[in-house]
Length: 314
Length: 252
Image (tube, rainbow over all chains, first blue to last red; front, side):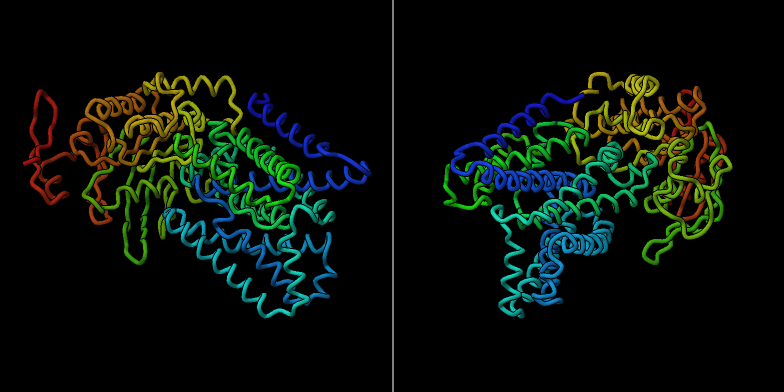
């Protein structure tokens, strides 16, 4: 029952990936291809998890403008990273890099996100303005705390934090990438089994509960999923403020549906497509003259405005 | 039958319902009436388990609601809330399909589609079924939500001020449909109504609340008296008869 629009998206993504891999391939082909493959995998992982995490967050907050990054999820992740280095010292933190480091960070992130966002969501659900404000305040607080910790650090620790926080698409930590892909596979498995109940959850807490859905438990699990996906995206490439919002708006206006069976794959494909196409343009056309974030925000912002003016975003 | 025993509920230290004892008959239309702030909607929400009582219990057809599993309750009663909004873009037919969730868990079979068709027809939504919910008027949206609750195919239907957004034509039609559901399908219907005349003309039974307590309850034929209603609303209410129907006159 593959939707035609999803097939078109999939084909465009495959074309963009092929372009990314083979355009301007010169010199030691095998070596360059390997580098590009790793980078491509990271781009796909980040795009898909940012898209899916944002759709999920909009479902449980019953809101079409909020994103995990507006609510401070990725700021929280950065704070935890910084806290880890500050607490353990540069030597200690470097010992837990790679797979165990990623597992530890993700676990701490899950715990912190659950404690914070379950209470925030349950207390402010009736009032979206309050929820946005609380999220923005939390985000600012996390960023300020992060900056504060960084001032207290020794230079060697600070260099380490910086390398971790702004790990760009050029230097991908391969073990973190593998762990991230594994985590995403688990998330995908859960979503394949439970996407229908998410359709009901999007109606809101009260209607979903009167249809017999255990809403609060579901919300807890979805928050875990969001925290894990945000960890994947942020660990691999750092915060992507605008990507999630852009992806979900595009997914909604393309699919015109409430069904997560359509929305989630669409958001994953669009997120990956934007990143792969953006990175290709950025590397091959602009010759690294800018940063990918700028490319995304420029093209994305334009598209967003066009959609807004044409009334496609609601 | 819904039996409400010694039910109390408070919010932020203020008692809203105190020691409410009420019986709501099965297979009848029951109206919860009373002045603003009497606790009508709160009582309905407690029965719908959207709120948790501080004290007391509610039994529905012998089943203690505090003990019942959510999935079991969803096949027993359907609820239409007062404020209806949905953030995601849902078509009317898909919304009604959500009413089948307790039976199908999202995999709609032939029986589910038949139930959805029945609800679409009964609530006159044939022309609207492919429209998005956010493109509809308040009254149309309300009908879609009521159709969804109907598709849930439950013994009990709870509606919180369903007449709020409806014009004369649709309000009357809705009450007639609810009566029809009670008489033909034996559904127990509980509604919160503000317009006294709709309650008197269409309900079988009333539960009147005042200041969080039951002022009186019973069949409409016995309870709809000028004396009781005037006392309930602290406003002169005259009862007259017009072409054999009881009419409350309180407008001036």
